[in-house]
Image (cartoon, rainbow, N blue to C red; front, side, top):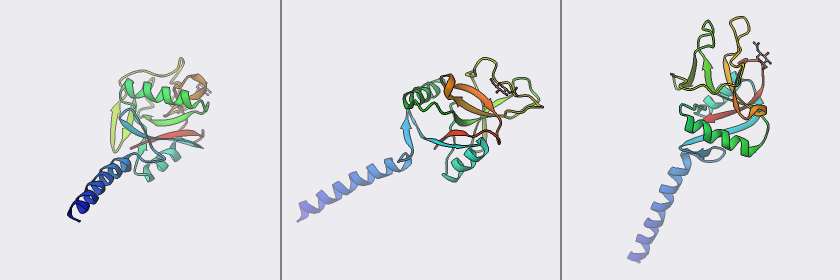
Length: 159
Ligand SMILES: *[C@@H]1O[C@H](CO)[C@@H](O)[C@H](O)[C@H]1NC(C)=O
C-alpha cells in the first residue's frame, strides 16, 4: 500500500513537470529554436495582427539575432505556403531616410542590428508610409516593408 502511493506521487510529479513545460509552448504555438511561435496563415493587416497576438498574451515575433531569423526562414520555406507573414518589426521614424527599424515587444523597442531587406527595400517614405514589416513569401522570405493598415497577410506571434 505504502509503495503504491509513492508510485502514484512519482507519476503525478512527472505529469506536472510535463504539463508546465507544455503550457508555455502548446498548440497552436510551436517551439522553433529557443522560442515559441504561432505561424498564422489567416490574412489580416499588420495592425490587426498586432491586436490578435496581444490578445493571446503574445507579441508579434521579434528576430533580434540572425540565428532566430535563419531558423524561421527555414521553417517558412519548409511550409511552402507562398504566403507573406507580418512580424514585429516597425519603423518608428518615417522622417529618417530608410527609417529607424525596431523590434517591438512589451514596451521595448530594440534596434534592428542587421539588414535583411530585399533590394530596393525598405521603400516607404513620409508621403507613402510603409512602417510595418513582413517576410515576403515570393522572395525567399526576405524583409519587405508594408503599409500597416491596408495590406492583408499572414502573421507570426511569439511568446
Ligand atoms: C515599394 O515597392 C513595392 C514593389 O517592390 C511596390 O509595390 C510599392 O508600391 C513600393 N512602395 C512605395 C511607397 O513606393
